[in-house]
Amino acid sequence: MSSDTNKFHKSKQSAAVLKHAIIDSYATPFGSKTGSTSKDNRVSFIDGYAGPGRYEDGSEGSGAMLLRKAKELAAMSRPRKVELHFVEDDEETVTKLRAVAEAEGEDVEYTITDDDISKYLPVLLDAVKDIPVFVYLDPCGLPIPLEEVSTIFERPSGPGAPATEVLINLTASLRRFAGMLYSDKAAENSLKKLDAVCGGEWWRAAWLEKCPTKDASEDQKMAAELAVVEGYAGKLREKVGTLGTWIIDVKPRADLKPIYYLVFATRSIHGMVTFGESASKGLEHWRKYHAEEAAEDDLFGSAADWEKTWKAEEKKLSTQWVDTLADRITAELAKGQAFKIIDRSEEVLGDDLVGLVRTMHFRAAINKVLAAGKTTTDPRGVNDLYSLLIRPA
Image (tube, rainbow, N blue to C red):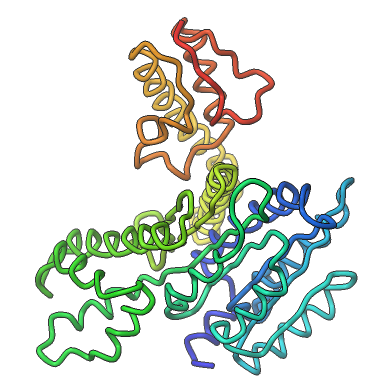
């Protein structure tokens, strides 16, 4: 294991707080919903770069979290039988992971494989071929090639087929590889590694279109980076026929550039909606983490009031989002036809609210529009507001 990886596993960094909060929020509804109709209520999770299970400071890594989730799902009134498959190719890290699993995995069905996920993924996919599967790929470097990711979706699709979903960490070290494009002596072997990850050389042109010279501005570099990430998500949709993808840029702080991107892919509209809810909750948890961290670093005694301040800021954000949603819903209603948010997501959510808002914000916004006399639709008692038909008054 490299020294960088060792450092990463010592304590949970800010960016890891977000991705783990999203998984923590999403694992339960995924297991509960997909397991309700699966064979023997079985559900599986594959963690392809599992890590040590817990960080050295004791905080949960993905391993400990999934073990906990498996127990929670097994304890439901309608239990789900969760099967966990961990893959990790570093011997020292595997030893730590096994210790965590032995201590915390009682009554949980799990496997731990000391191997490369590229080699072992086909074996695991065969083992879970008849049941829902969520695959988490969170490498410290580049993820497995797109061709290998696509094999995850070589499973039955359509009504009654088991769910298939993937969450991939696409590293923002894209810049390091892209920097080679400006060299007369480009390291072609390194570039080909990213070609494989992206499913072809297309990313090179996508990068250079936004960032034509090595002296490009930070804004140009950010645009190029996002173009490659969006292109990757598009290639994944095209290759495997997924319904859609979510992209979440993961930053150490809100005012800093992303250090990596999470790309989520699913064939199910329910998966898209539920993941959006989880992304919103994860970001809220991330904001709270930063508020507490900032208070602890403050030398002027504000630490005792941090939670009160954070709640006030969250209320302000929520009000802004609800007002924006209400305005956009009103604008859609002005067109004179009933609609569903799921069918007008670009118009209602735009690029600015995707992953930030969730059901609680939609409900408040629709109620505001109802109170203004612009709709006859009452969201009271409706759980799936994305699919609610909103009628003009």
